[in-house]
Image (tube, rainbow, N blue to C red):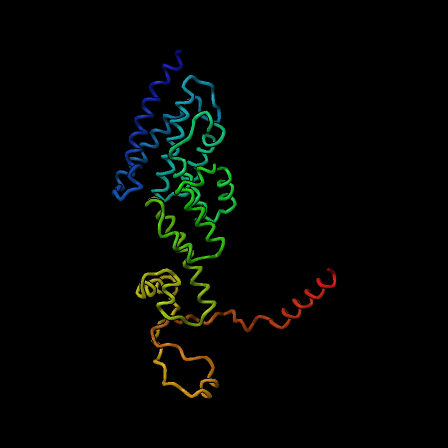
Length: 304
């Protein structure tokens, strides 16, 4: 009986600190402004809460049997979930990974004893998105496999899963479309990082595939809202892109002249001109590649 009575005081203190943290983190998903001073105070509260948790004997890795073990472990799980939310809000990926690693035993071996956590889908979704931003795809899929079907169906988890699927397909436009509607504002900073990376990849593909594009088409390809936004993006990320106005098309030519001239002239309008690639397609040894491919096909036919 004595140990339970001694543990009641830190448990009460931990609950009070948790309530203070939740008052801040509950506003992360809304449009409410959380100032830097308030975030600093929440970080200090988290440090105090971690100190209190050191007085709980039932926590992993020791997991000493205790009459209040379930209560202590539930408080610790909630504390580490709050630590994850604070780390995401602060943009501290290393702190997020540390807090998640502390959560793993509570979501694994202790999950049945503690019951479900209402915050798990949101925290898991944020961690999955962090792995996606960090290009840790192996860890991403491992964590997905550990989630239940119900947890995977939650909007916070389904969102990074959808982004990963679209990125695997190489459907950059669908990635940008999906990224435009995150589950909450807490996802926004990491989503912005993914959108920027995907937009850069799409821009490199466009530059390798075209000599120039109409400004409107290029903006639509990169999911930028206007020609002005395209110019700002190019100035920041691709200063070697040039913008020019194409000359108006000349009057209709005769059929023989058009046939000799080749494709129809481009439509008038502003265009973005990409720099010539240093690795020209002419440098690809096309004939040897075709010969080897045909020889391989013939060899396979004889084998079969």
